[in-house]
Length: 67
Image (cartoon, rainbow, N blue to C red; front, side, top):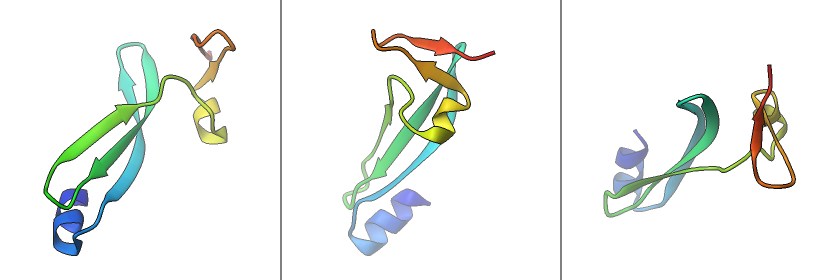
């Protein structure tokens, strides 16, 4: 859907979702480009209130999974 919107509207379209990778959950961002390319990026640790419900980030960059 994002790819179709980006190519039809000739615009960059972004969205994000929570994704599980192994034992961790990440906020994954998706960007669809006007030329049809699609890229994703997993954030290293949580920074938003919603993300904090799933895991907590430490100052040393390591994430601690909440029980």
